[in-house]
Image (cartoon, rainbow, N blue to C red):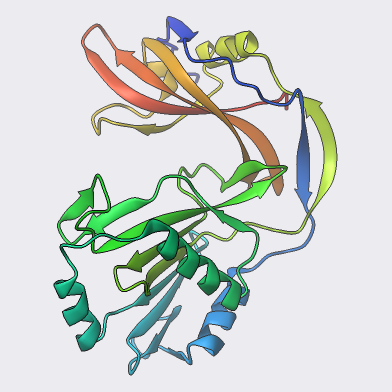
Length: 277
């Protein structure tokens, strides 16, 4: 039974994007397995399998832990600070992190451990133990998102909203943490297709053919059909790896404001295929 669609109006008020008229669909060519990267880390950091849990590896002496979540296809590598490094970090807490130097260290780390095809994103996040800072002044570490691109278009896994690779560098310019959501890097061109025009996309969204990716309010139902109005003010074009089809498909990701009734407003992100499937 289809759920009733309450969406009465959808409008786009942002700048007209300059996307290419033609885009490609890519088919996964070879099977990628996150265990391949796990094996590289295990060898490089002399890790051994944990006695207490599966899909976990440790180096007790160097305070390094590695974990694999097969369900989420996600790898996490954590470097706990040594006593000396903890002291140095405390002494530097009122300084500032050099962003370019942190990115350089992260890129060198990726190259050393055979992680290729990633470029640093534009929005690093400055961190302390208490939370997020607006600037690098006083930051204890910096989270650097890395993007994987196809045809100069950012690629994301499935219905995620984060970069496939995030690296945290502390103010000693040592790697503190790596989070990796591996994307297939071996693929072949299946076909080319024309991007759908904005007017057509607005109709498709109004008819309930899109999905809400994120919403700023926890109380907002994550179903497009329960919104009553939607005003979109920004759009990006990105590839999303659709696991069920084993394909990279072009998607639009819109940002905007949705309403539920007359009073409740929320910031939302909407995704919808950018081509006719």
